[in-house]
Image (cartoon, rainbow, N blue to C red; front, side, top):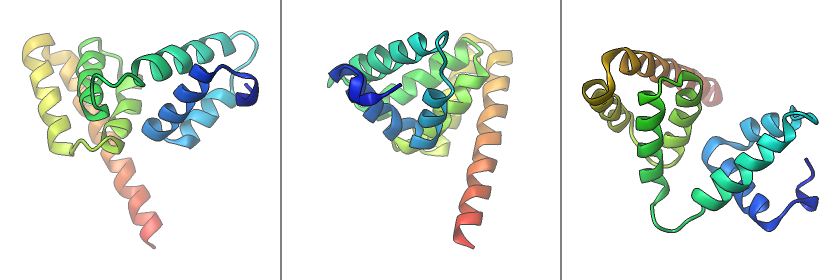
Length: 136
């Protein structure tokens, strides 16, 4: 997808999406889009990131709290993995993320919380390894 040919809402969403999830991830997602998957990438970028994440009513940190809780409750580990990094980028601490998952355990079920806790721990290990490599 060529951002120069996209709508203002798409470009707003693209900026927010890159800030939260990281440019490398977003670029991989968009570069991998083909004729079949490009419409969903456009939809997600415009409406999820441009319209919803771009609204002023909630700070990004709060949106990350909500997303982690909902994605954990829905038992969507792939999306939890993605949004753990986004939550860290938005200022949440590992302890806050842990508390979110514990809350999910009580209100949405232990199996979903266990899956999300495992994913969070894996992401934290990856991030620690990336930080150690960058420090060398």
